[in-house]
Image (cartoon, rainbow, N blue to C red; front, top):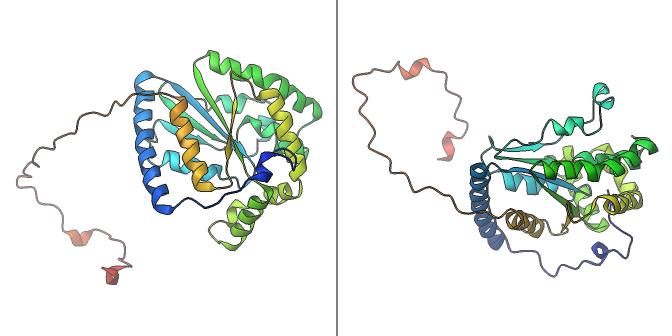
Length: 278
C-alpha cells in the first residue's frame, strides 16, 4: 500500500547522517530490556495486546518485528503472518481467520500484515470485488471497536518509505542471496503500481484512522531509526512497571553419587567442522 502524492512528506525526507552503529546497538539493547519488563507487566496484568505492522513493501516491518521478539518469551509473544487464504477460507467471514489468532490474557500478538490486506494488495491487484472492498472499509472500524471494547489493546503501525529508498532495497535484495526470497513477484508488481498503492493507503486511512484506533506512521527511510522509534512508541503506549524479580542465588550443585554414565563413544556426535578455528 502507499503513501500520498509527490508532495507527501515522505518524498521530502532528508537524512543528514545515518545513525552510528555503536549508538544503535546500545540503544537497541536497552530497549529490548524494557520490552522484557513490559512483557512481564502484560503477563502479570493479563493484558491482551495486538500490534499490526503494515506499510510499503521493503519498508522494514520484518526487521522491527524481529528486534521486538528476539528477547521476549515466545510462549507469550506470537508473530502471525498469514499466507494466501485457502478456498475454504475465502468462503468465510473475512475477519474469521484473523480472529483465530487473537491473544488470550497475558499475550502479545504481532501481525506481519493483517486484515488490511483487503484494503491494500487485494484492492490494487483485483483479488477482491468492489463490493467486498467497500464492505471491508465499512466493517473494519466496527470490528476494531469490538476488539477494543473486549479489552484488546490494538496498536497499528504504518511504515512509510520513499520510492527512492524502496528501489534501493529492492536492488539490494536482488544482489544478496540471503534476501532474494524477500522479493516476490507481488513486490515487483507493487513497484510498478506505486501510485495505485498510494491511493489505496490514503483511502484506507480515511476510513480507519480514528481516535479510538489510530494509525501510527513510522518514517522508515532510515531502518535503524525506524526500529528504535517504533519500539520506543510501543513502550510508550503500554505503560508498565518494572516487575523484575530479585536475582536468584544458585545453590552448589549436588553430588551425583555413584552413577556411571554410558561410554561417550556410544553417542553420535556431529562432526566438528571448525575444530581448527579454536
